[in-house]
Image (cartoon, rainbow, N blue to C red):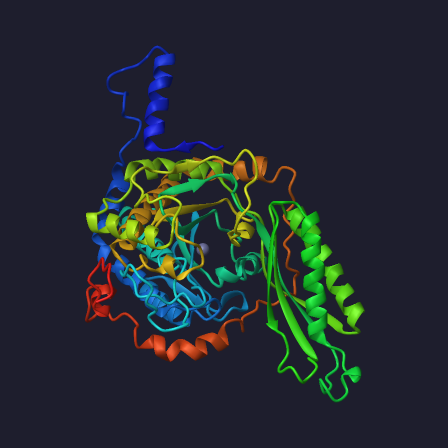
Length: 535
Ligand SMILES: [Zn+2]
């Protein structure tokens, strides 16, 4: 069990504490949440005044619907916005063409704001409808909600930048994208190539269904993503098959061996594979075949051990089939560890900002989607804050995020903001349905307020930066040496998804959001939100 530090919980806790101390006072009771004051209060107002830009960024990225390593329209759009606002932009960092790095300001602290930008295959979906309707059949879409995080970050950065300029505050704001996060394929490379050297704190944002932050070891896993390619000998499948050596046989034997081995792996491991290349046609013995594995575990040692097992199994499959084998690391993610002092600062700002005010339409829409997708509970949208989550007492398995590698280089937290709906299946078109509606817009604005206030905490309070590094060195790094799963020469897999995007980009372009003509993307698409029935 872990404890939820909701505003209500804090209020009860503080009240109880005062009773114990015999110092209960009328002013303290029920007043656990301190409202934001000074520059932080001003930043929150500025975030509200930027709501149109926030919505435009969110809806534009939604409409681009780009897969990992192919986020070029996203790059063009976001870096234009940032350049127009005085940021210096570098394209193609870490040898990744769709990546970029934007910075503004001078001196310390250097605060780096990151968020993912890539979509999910076959998740194309018209937003605001309560039924399945792809925008473009089989095309990618934002089936996780990665269209929203840069809207959080850019909005917060612009709000704070204006105050830093007026008050002459020192500090550097860096904005950066999580490229190909769905492949977990860039942040270890950014870290390896030194992009976070000199950064004092990383504030990462990720879509969720509540305002929350955690510290310590996160729920979920880390992983190695690796392709094994086998090379055999082609032959006529019927004429002279004895002359052939099938690379596909090697792939199948490898998979059989791994699936037998599963029984003897730790129950919290997760592993899965797809056959990227299984040959060309049945009557040609496949001379080339490739299988792509994700090997996940809750500890770095566990990931390494399972990866070594997989490697031996691949070697065994090659031996059994007289094929040759080569491997390539496609992605890597260390298990995440988040910074306690920064998380507590975020938590105070979460309590002060609170959840958005949802309309009846928002709540009805959320419930309709939960019904449609057979969610465990029909809860609608969150009305009680998650706040600060403490580390789980026992490790919890699940997904990974390559922010893990960043979190071992610099004090890092992930702020989750309420732009999506609880209880929908992950990596799925249903997670795109709310992501260009008022639910997403309100959630992004709430996230931007918390983020802006936290940036100001770090700028105005050097002790917080110091406490963050003390926790990082004295707590987090005790007993753990970060050794990345990628080597110094492993290249990023930048060709991934190029074929898929080439197939769909022209069709998707017809639906790119045009904010000069439409106030919202829903308006451009002619969707009457919330639309429950097919017309
Ligand atoms: Zn994500």
